[in-house]
Image (cartoon, rainbow, N blue to C red; front, side, top):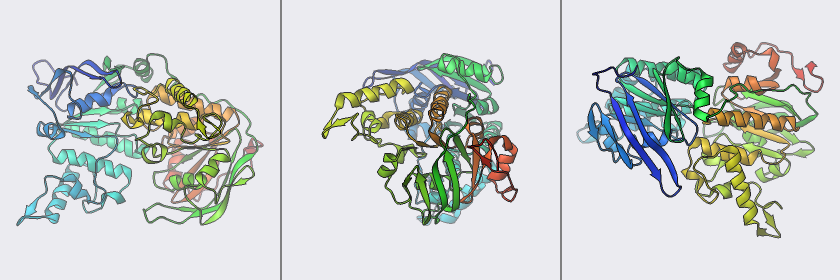
Length: 526
């Protein structure tokens, strides 16, 4: 709901502007915006279009070059996170700011710890957090240590931190980027409940269906400017995507039928013990990936998908079983050896595995191939070739605010993902391990990645697509497998599965149900 005439908005922005001289980017261009009490406003746009920068102006991360911020009708100066909290603003960033070794209660009440006789009162803190969790529906055990929690629960802890500080307006920056579909659906319900209680929410997202479900109003940004504003239901997903990108966008992957080739990646009896870090491990995993096919791997986060990818990529050594790529056994190879055999790896953790955030974009772009003849000759670096390749990656993937010689750590999460994907899909890999390849990407970039994965398939690569986006799995895959508690179910012919049956497999409810397995080479069942 738009604030009605005479009603003071919870938040009002007037002509906010932010220019980054170092990169020559006008990130926020004279943006004006209102958020009413009890209203959910979705802020959408491409990666690097200024959404996060605008919110960082609100939270004291950056200072505006021009414009004013009003909270409940009063102009405020926000120069730090403490200033933002003081005026009732809270923000949950894409990358959480929690202390892993602390408990939930200690994180939620950090800086506001209850004390008894001068000492920290654990029992009082746990009671207070339990009451807040019950009141808001963000269920979590206050006594659990944060490092032992799944990503979705850690996000709840971040939200509770803001609510414990009495935030009247909550900023959620790409809140579902790391969530499973069921967790994302639950978050939408929780956000609507917060609005019903009188709190306001700014919901930054690129996922149009969830935006349509959660928002009272949708504000579209492109190139730092507001280019459209709609009440929920006034604009279709296609219209919103067109405004975000500036052109028509294919929202559903276009998958051409083709006959797969011979097996190129084969796993036989691969087992990995559960890790001390709480990882699930793998139990006797056997399957094959054929040339010219995409096998989608679905599952609730934490059921062994990452362990499977790491075992294939030689980042984790199996306790038993074999992994072969063509005629090369990868089971005891190094990651470099696996790449030399023709493996490309789009890591699910772009921040710690996929990239070195302190290195330049150019260095990251060639980090997996810097010794190749394309970028070095007789031990001498071909700097011009490296720079040209990095610039081509920036142009092809529309990496906003980037330059070859600048550190990648200054880029937004979605733009970091574009760098990883551009690097890994370069050339002609035999096998592509694509772990959450579109996580954090906008609709235009998702379209580009889907086309790139489909092109790799058409060129004869085998693609293992790991994704929590069931629509993505069903749209792109030739066959679909499910990981449940470290066990691989399938792969099944895509025609044998729908969203309901896939959901039952993901929760173990259909684990005992027999399915006919597909023989990809013959195109039929066996």
